[in-house]
Length: 154
Image (cartoon, rainbow, N blue to C red; front, side, top):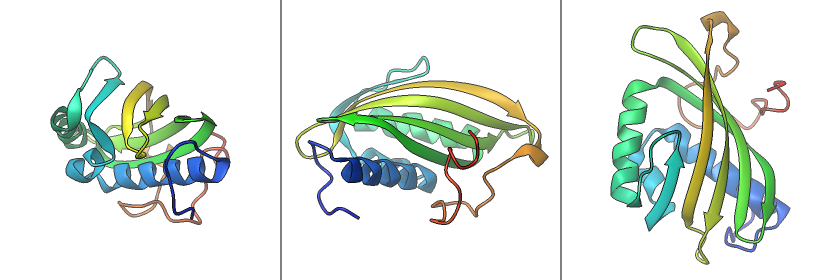
């Protein structure tokens, strides 16, 4: 894995940055995840607009209390300079046992130290049957040998 994940990104550093983000989000640890964003980071996530690490932690705490058994895969779409675009899908269930697959795209912008200063996410949820789930690894980091989005036809 590349040792320096700061802009300007190369293909290898962009892919590594995406995987680190996926790993962080799969931890479902709001404090850990918030550390990769600038203190004044600006987000758009669906219809919410968190600003700064404190609001990011609050947002993620609410998210993962509602989205149970959360498993995420991110994939690099494009990169240039200090920006990275990704596509992603994640599976989760609600407290009634109904499963969903959420699809989306994110645009990221980083500061010179490699912290994300802006994140814009567009996300759609699709109900799925439990037997249609594709993400079956134990909670936490996706194993290296688990297929990615393209491999799964997503």
